[in-house]
Image 1 (cartoon, rainbow, N blue to C red):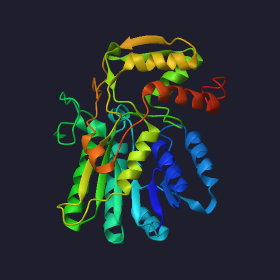
Image 2: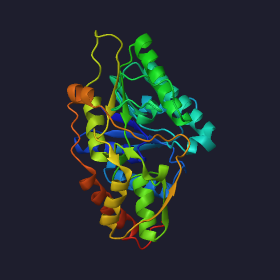
Image 3: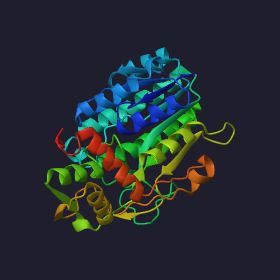
Length: 331
């Protein structure tokens, strides 16, 4: 039966959809194609998906609008849902909080409620975030850590989504798996993420702002590894008879990389030095992220294979191709 993927025009959603189709699935995509970042990039992803013909169908609508997701789910014939649509961005949530309440809270509720009412959903996999760990200074971050002290509204909405999903699994028996993604990068990535921001600026000869004066570490995770984890989770719904059918996993690279080394690899791939302007820590940011993936390895067979030494050159190669080798990097 088909799979319904929300956020199919987004970065991870596009790659998950391609992977599902590559293994023989049909996909109904659901996406509002909003203007949080340049919709032309989303349209370019959708154009690539459209080449699959009848294997891919798009429903363009807003998850937060009453009834539209339920109608799309009913018409799709899907028995599994991968819910990746959300309003992303820690910093953006400080200035535009209402966007996060609507997209991440109302939207997530509409998905789980529609799945409950549908009655034929074998598994709902949804995106959470490493941001839920807040200012936790215990490393690596474990799914057993408390996540009740978020330091951004974005993180708060993701933590709340996990609680909503747990309650629906407990009360209604809806099988669900939440995946906490750690700093995903790669081809067709989001322009508001560090790899894209730094690469664009270096190509254009503009300075890059590096927060906390470069004293930052991130568990950078290549998108192909994330996709493998999403599909592995989708294929392994929480079993019946083993308590509440809701599980949470970290999907990360299980290594914390210095931000300055990350930038150096971009410089090497681009072939130019960055003009760096150091700045204090931004509100809502954390100094370091680092994923404990033992549960993901054990239950999902998750095994990230792409270090940043390999992933960054692949991303820069895509950037060159998409933007015309840096000639029109402002596109």
